[in-house]
Image (cartoon, rainbow, N blue to C red; front, top):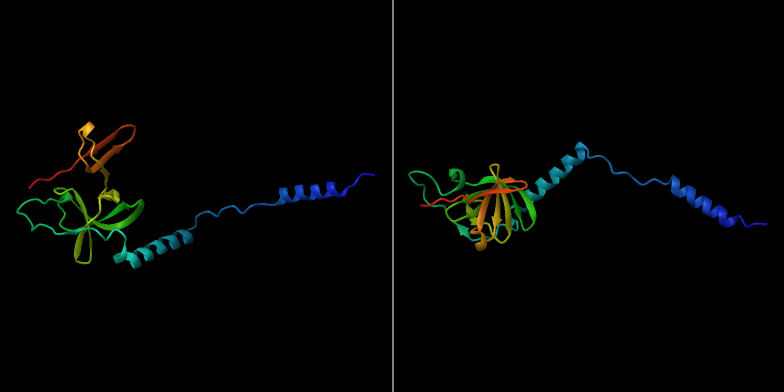
Length: 164
């Protein structure tokens, strides 16, 4: 007579594994999305002055000129931008791009400071995507911020400069 215990045990395991279902991920709901957005907004509002990118050197705007400005889009104050700082994206960061000194500037309250170039890799400002390139003497490219106009099979970059 054949022992049916191992056969019955294997049959039960097969049936249980066939009937067991893993939880499927729930679709993104409006409540979940709004909760995530609220958490990010709350975090950014709470951390504001303590943010890791508020540690650059002090920056002072030159007095207003008769005509023009050394800043991108002739801005005289910071504009909300999206930046990638130390590998993390931050939204609604006040940024001013000084094209004369090739520096991205931010502000907290009434003080302005230069964003550290060793930490900033991308800045999206007024629909323009600026990337930071290192100097490439073999290709006649100086280092600094470049406006990426096209990024496909080829790449179109513009170096924006203002002289006084």
